Length: 125
Image (cartoon, rainbow, N blue to C red):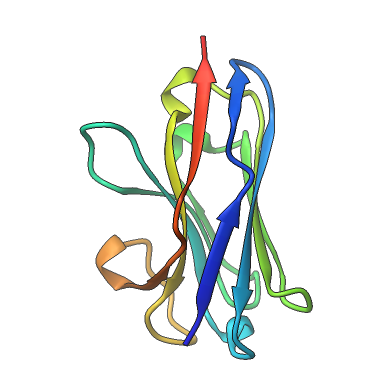
C-alpha cells in the first residue's frame, strides 16, 4: 500500500515557475513508477509526466516537454514536478499517482493504483 500527499500548487503568473511535491508513505515506494496527472475543468484527467521506479524511464506530455521535469528521491519517499515557463493551459488540479503494480510502467490513468488528494495550480495570463 502507498499513501500519497501532494502539495505545492498555487496561483502563479504566466512564465513563472512552480514545484509540486508528493510525499509517499510505505517502504515499497521505491518499487513503484510514479506520475503526475492533471485535470482541467471540464476535461478528463491526463498524464503530465511519469517516472520509473529507478528513474531510468521518464515520459512527458508533448505540451510540457522541455519545461517540466519529474524527479524522485527514493530515500525521502518523495516525487517532484518542477514546472517552468508556465502557460495558462497548465491550470488544473494536479494529482500525484503511483502505479497499481510494482516494477510496472504505464501512463494510463486506469493503471494507477494510488492517488494523492490533488493540489490546485492556477496560471494567470
